[in-house]
Amino acid sequence: MDRITPAIGKNIHQVTSVAAEVPQAAPASEQPEVLGQFDYVKTRVVPLRAEHLERNRIVAFNKNSNMSWAFDLLRTQVLQTMEENGWRTLAITSPTPEAGKTVLAINLAMSIAHHTTKTALLVDFDLRRPRVGASLGLPMDKSLNELLASKAGLEEVLVNPTLPRFVVLPTREPVPLSTEVLSSPKVNSLISDLRERYDSRICIFDLPPLLSSDDAMTVLPKFDCVLLVVANGVNNKKEIEDCLYHLAGCNVIGTVLNKAEVQVRSYY
Ligand SMILES: Nc1ncnc2c1ncn2[C@@H]1O[C@H](COP(=O)(O)OP(=O)(O)OP(=O)(O)O)[C@@H](O)[C@H]1O
Ligand SMILES: [Mg+2]
Image (cartoon, rainbow, N blue to C red; front, side, top):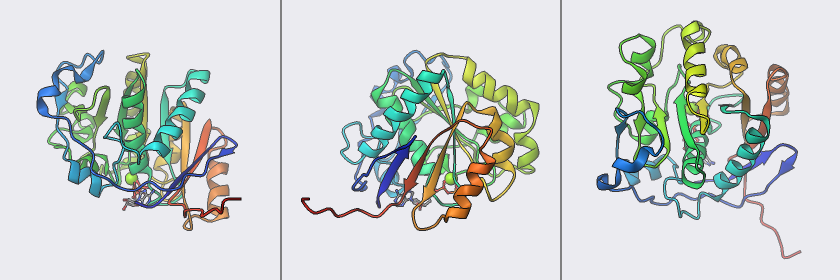
């Protein structure tokens, strides 16, 4: 895996590298206690495959991974700011596609679940290009698609991928008329329901890129705060300025410079 450099608030933190490694999937026998205080009794518990995670750059599944420290650092800073402000919903977006939002959202949620007492609920709100479920290798016979179509209830579409306090609401396939759907009362009440049900829950929403369609702009005001992922060498100054313009009414919790080059430093 290439590098990731989180920069949040006004502080920029250089991170050397985040390489892929093989995370250890928990055996199915350890599954019953995984939900902790999360009382969705029907939540499906799904084991993850280490090689699949590795292929998809999901490094934070293994609690002791020395590759996930960039996400742990980001987690600490994000949670501090969220707690200070009483924020519980975090949206993740980027100027353009392929900045690494989905990879970051999954690793960040896993890091929260591993190292805090909070439940991390990750929702795939990229209704044009949903990738959370596929990146994790989750079965998605019932997903946000069915929930939005009123063909399944919330408890039927949530998945616990064997990691304590980590719950995912995947989206199996693109949702037609996504902008309209994201501005619907149904989505409003879903976001508030997910937010309000438990104090100790952080809800992370993986959004589409900000400048590619209206989707992100439509739904962003509904979240407590937003994290902007910028791809090193891909996004230019104008795109970042455009994003900040569109995000003027939002609480921008910080910016992550992703896929950054390693800075080779001399002793001095
Ligand atoms: N830190 C990183 N270093 C190198 N490659 C990365 C990094 N983060 C993500 N990638 C790779 O970049 C590609 C895009 O990642 P990802 O799907 O997370 O981006 P995205 O912003 O969610 O894309 P989209 O806008 O299509 O939803 C993937 O191939 C992923 O493995
Ligand atoms: Mg994505």
